[in-house]
Length: 281
Image (cartoon, rainbow, N blue to C red; front, side, top):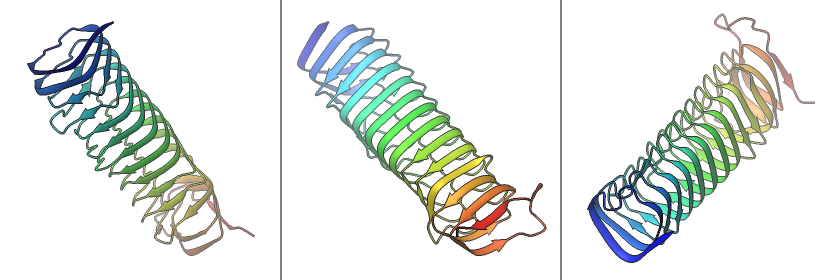
C-alpha cells in the first residue's frame, strides 16, 4: 500500500482512480471528486473540505477524520466503508451505498443522509438536524444511538435498533420488519402505515401514534400522557405498562394497558372491528 502523509490537495480529481492508498494527516481543499473511482483506501487524521471526495469507491477506511461543511455529498455510490471516531459536518452524506459501518461518529447536520443504502451498522452514533434520514434503506443494525430530526426511516426494511433516543416526527412511516428495543421514541405520528413494526421495552410520546399500522406488536412499552388518538385503523397486539390517554378505532387485535383515558369506537371503525381492549389486573 502506498503512503501519502502531511500534505495537501485541491482542485479536480487530484487522486482519481487511486488504489491501495493510505492517506495520513492529509487535507483535501476545495474542489471536486478527490478520490473518485478508487479502491482499498485508508484515510487517517485527514480533513476533507472539497465536494464529493469519495464517489464510486470500493473498500475504504476512515479514522479520526473531519468532513467540513464544504465536503457535502462526500460518500455516494460506494461499497464497504468503515468509519470510526469521525466528525461529519457536511450534509447529504451516504447515498446509494452497500456496506457501511459507523462507530463513534457524530453528524450534526444529517439532513437527507443515508438514502438508498444497504447493510448499514451504527454504534455510538449521534445525528442532529436529521430530516429524512435513512430514506428507502434496508438491512440496518443500530446500537447506542441518538437522533434529532423528522421523517426518519421512511420506507425502510429490515431494521433493528437497540438503546436509542429518537426525537422524530413521522418516524418509521411505511416501514417493513422494524424492531426497536429499549429505546425512547418522541414525536407525533409514529409508525403510520408500517408493516410488522415491533416495539420492545420502549417509551413512546407524541400525538396520534401507531395509526394505520399492519401487524404492530408492542411488548412492555410505556406511553406518555400526550399519546392521544392512538392505534386508529391498526391491527395490533400490545402490552402497555401505563395508561393510554385515548384509543381511537383500532381495527383488530388486542391491547392490554393499565387503563384508558378515553376509548373512541364510532361508525368510522374499519372491519373486522374486533380489537379487544383489556385492562391489566
